[in-house]
Each structure stands twice: as C-alpha cells, then as structure tokens.
Length: 321
Image 1 (cartoon, helix red, strand yellow):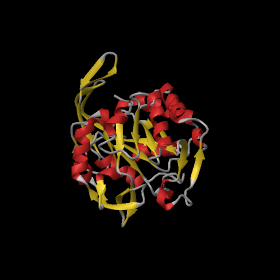
Image 2 (tube, helix red, strand yellow):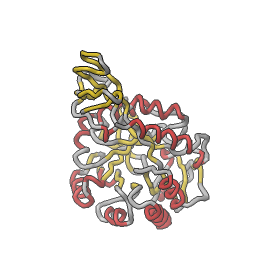
Image 3 (tube, rainbow, N blue to C red):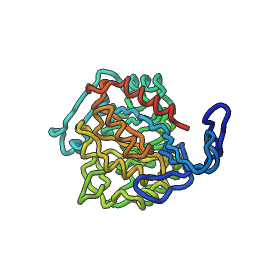
Image 4 (cartoon, rainbow, N blue to C red):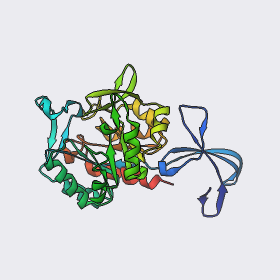
C-alpha cells in the first residue's frame, strides 16, 4: 500500500493490524471493517530511514435505529419486554414519538446514514406496516428485524430492506439451530443476513438471550462462536441488554470482546449517554465496532443532540482510509 505523507514524498508500507489485547498481529488489515491500524514501515518516511510505526484510525459508523411497538416509534427498556400472552404491565417506555417510522427513515436518508436498524417489537400488523413504510422511505438504507424467519425474510428484502436481522428463530432449546440458520442463509444469502447476538452477563460470561431478551441460551460470545457464526452472516448486531435503554453508560468489556474477536462488521447498542461514550466505544472496540444510540438522543426524548452524533459520524467517515 502507498500513502502520501506530503505532496513530494510517498512510501510503501507493510500493514499489520495490532490488537492492544494481544502481542500477535492480526494480518490482512481491512478498512472496510474500520480497524485501528498499527502500521509498521520499512524504508523511508518523510526523509527518515528505518522502521517506523504510525497509528492510523479508520472511521467508526453511527447506525441509527427505529424501534416500533404497536405501530408507534418508541424507546423501550428492552429487558422489560415480555411476550404478549404474559401481558405488558411491567413494560417501561422511555419515549413514544408522534413522528412516523417513515419520517425517521427519511431523516436518516437525508443525513446519509446507512445500515440503520428497524426493529419490530412485536408481530402485530401495525408494527409490520410501519416497518414497511420506513423501508419504502429509505430503500436499501435500512435493515429490519423482529419476527424474521425463512418464510418471510425475502418479502422484507423485496420491500427495500438491505438486510434482515434474526435472533430467536435460529436458536432452539438454548442452542443454535443449525438447520434453520443454514436455510435462512440460503434463502436470503449470507450477504443479507444480520445475526442479533444480544447478550446478558451470566457467570462472568456473555450469554446470547432470545425471546425478547428474556431467555438465556447456552451460547456464549467468544472467538470460536463468532468465527463460526460469521460463516452464515454479513454482520452481527449486539445489544448489551444489562445496560440497554437505561442510559447508565456502555458495557466496555463487551465492546472490547467484540472489537477483538468479531471477524465481520459488528454493531454495539446499549447505554450510550454522552459523546464521550462514543469515543469509549471507538477505543474499547479498537475502531472495529459500530454504534447505535437510542433513548439518549434528543429525537427520542433524551439529552444527546442527534445533530452532534451525526457530525461525529461524519468525522469518523473522514478518518477512513
């Protein structure tokens, strides 16, 4: 690779991606992943010979969200969600918008934000209709999740979703249902599948949770699991359920795990409250973890200015190689 350090000088660089958690480099650095690169050079840089190291930071992305509950855009504390048959007496709603899902989608489109998540918090017709309207407002710019399975996944792609997001459908009895996972990847294609691996802490490990985050699986996030599941998905989406919707700060340990071990793009959600939290994610995730912000944003009743987050996102894009 050749970088220009000033108009009159160029140098050939040998790239390695170095994790601060390990002394061993991860090879084949790829900025489509937005890693933080440690660049080792041999030769001459700006008139100096020998081996030099430069830190070059690639852009982390802000991924917007649209959470839909009974047809309305809401921000709900995810850990309070329950199956409808169990009632919703314990449901904690942080915010309910008077704007439609389609209006939010158009705003994200106008701000050139891609890869956002439309999540249906229920399989009711009103939520499905609102989600489809959002996809129509921003075709190709949004992913959709909530009740996705192999029989309906393609219909959402046809309505304009770039990807479908799946969790509970590919887990059964606490384990990955490999047949369903393979079938879904075959139906929509690996390049259009996002696996939601939202998790909660259990015995000092992160266990994937399903069924509106109420049921623990026996699947724990680690390098082996992430490497295997990456064979079937284009991206991962991971909510830190213990902090999600509570505006108490991020789960830095989880972000660090994802940044170190995910072999494909991954987005973290949960607990972002301030602009400093965005920087913490960038550092803890070594530049390889994208971020979603929900309840903290002023567009969802919070105090964090949406326009500031969009500006931060634009700054990160400018850092991309």
